[in-house]
Amino acid sequence: MPLLLLSGPLRLSPFRLDALNERLHGRLRVLAGRDLFLLDAPELTEDQRELAATLLCDAPIAEPGSAHSLHVAPRFGTRSPWSTKATEILRSCGLPVARVERVLVLDADRRLDDPEVLAVLHDRLVEVAVWDAGELAAIFDEHAPRPLRYIGRSREQLAAANVSFGFALSADELDYLAEQFAALGRDPT
Image 1 (cartoon, rainbow, N blue to C red):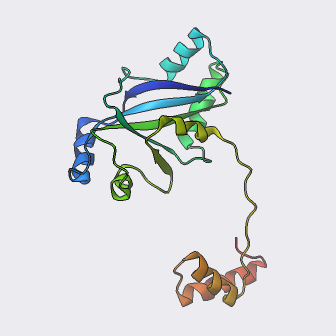
Image 2 (spheres, rainbow, N blue to C red):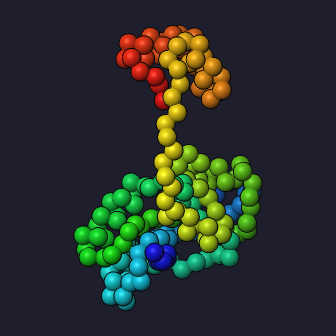
Image 3 (cartoon, rainbow, N blue to C red):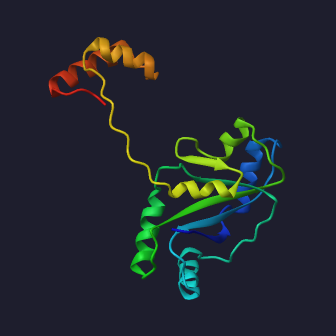
């Protein structure tokens, strides 16, 4: 299905914007933080597009404020809780939407790919940060889930997994896990 982009309202208040810029220590200045909604939907009629914009945008639309915009989106291959609920609402209002996601667009004074700066601007565990808006289409890519990998339940197998995966489990924790999984009669994943 085609990707539809709808500009949204400002998301960051002046207070939050100042706090964010303070954490950046002048290495980059964020000028504004605004919402961008991505819809995975067939071509919508003008009425449907207006309905989607009305449902998604509860404040005036924020215009792009910079040529340097960092897009902070849910990690590719995941679906945010916000997306699940918003998609359900749009569908119940009669819109033929496969999925909708909300992206935070940070308008900055310049482009900077410094990992330390990017770490301040997004949570790497659940979000991805991209400068090129064209990369956002990958958010709707469907991937087959990978099969679970099992670790043996013996203490030695758990100790080997502890080292290879970097779990940092103590000897007591390894003993406890080996005992519990033996009692359950199954291997950990």
